[in-house]
Image (cartoon, protein in one colour):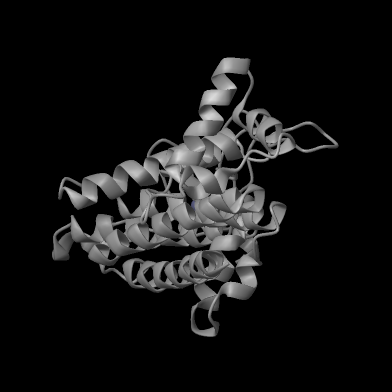
Length: 306
Ligand SMILES: [Zn+2]
Ligand SMILES: [Zn+2]
């Protein structure tokens, strides 16, 4: 029972630590992302162990896991089915580790290999989807390379992956009734969590960051006296309603929304040059003249009106 409580409170502590470091990383301290990854990875490891304990308290130990693997192999069934079989036969897991003072616990992969077998009783679909497993793998690799000082990641990669993992973790802890992730978040970290847990909010935050980063990159790479010639506009996207339409070299209109899955390129606000006087105007206010000009500004279209 004590082990159970320790695992849960450690998992929650690690999660809150991870959020604190994530916030620092987001504020520009890239080194802090390293610790955000380590803490989150530790939290996930503990949560997976908590899941095993819902089956049998001793299943967190590698030796007990091995018994399940052995049975699965001999019967040619999956690990969960093998566990259920052993459980039905009143297999004594406690006895397996009886003579060991400090038995090894399972690895993340071992814990995942059992959780992976869980399916929804109603729909038959898997509770742990492949994307979650891939993200955990990515994070594990990253943590390993961090420990060996060979890490290479972009801040954006970390931010996106942490967001997905936090959302998956919330589902996982809920599906297996481990604890309420949202309730476990400390008050002073809640604003960080609130963005990560909401996929749209998180994507929007990324889109705004991309606007700021792209702008900074363009201005920083241009010599000060040439900066006045930069054509930088931020438009409101007509599709998603955010102020996230910025210049994009690959776009046919010259602009593209930075919000994931929006990527709209059309806006009546985008300025084009008048075919007659050459002045820029929002394209929505332009008139096209049959067989002559495609874009005529209101001033050239109706000179008397001005
Ligand atoms: Zn948009
Ligand atoms: Zn004109």
